[in-house]
Image 1: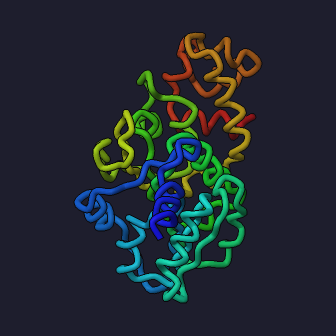
Image 2 (image 1 turned 180 degrees about the vertical axis):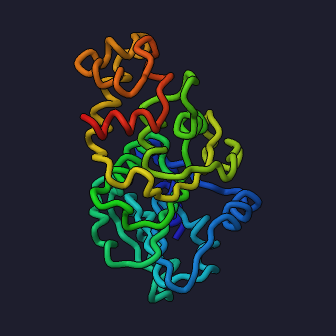
Length: 265
């Protein structure tokens, strides 16, 4: 019996390779939970539930289905054991990065939640932003990021941390900061704080070819200190037509202006 307990402890230890930092502060979890609104028709998708700290608050909410996508096999087994009495809670042992979210296209009122592993958080965000059908299958996303990444996502133009991820995120969604997660609310304690952001899909640029925008942003921010007329030297006439200052750098051009350029390429 003692040997089995020690094995279980080893299996449940946070894995650095998976970027695991578990939430373990009830006050923070309670505050976060208050910012998550659902109804009887909601399908909740929790990414990386870990040991179920947030899940234990989610099960008290109204929902039609709750899907827990957990890459760690041993944690997925633990989650199965914890919630096996619930017919509408499904555990999926899979890497969210490679998971096919088309499985949820027929669901109504989908909300994606996640204390995302810091090492893959931006990859996951772009996966959901790059949905071909827009508005997408989800109504809302509430996601945890490393503080520095979150600040880049919500940054405005003319700021040093404004970049590709800022424009791409804001062209697709209305974004607001919900809550800061001090490093002390995690185990193990990371070196940086986290920030929870809410993403609500916007239809402002619904007809925009998002891949064209991403290509434009890659060129524009490839050499940040160069003027935009150099980074986009093949589109100088277009920039002039849109009255964009050729001496601007990539960080000086607004989300709306980038979307206008992308539409005319």
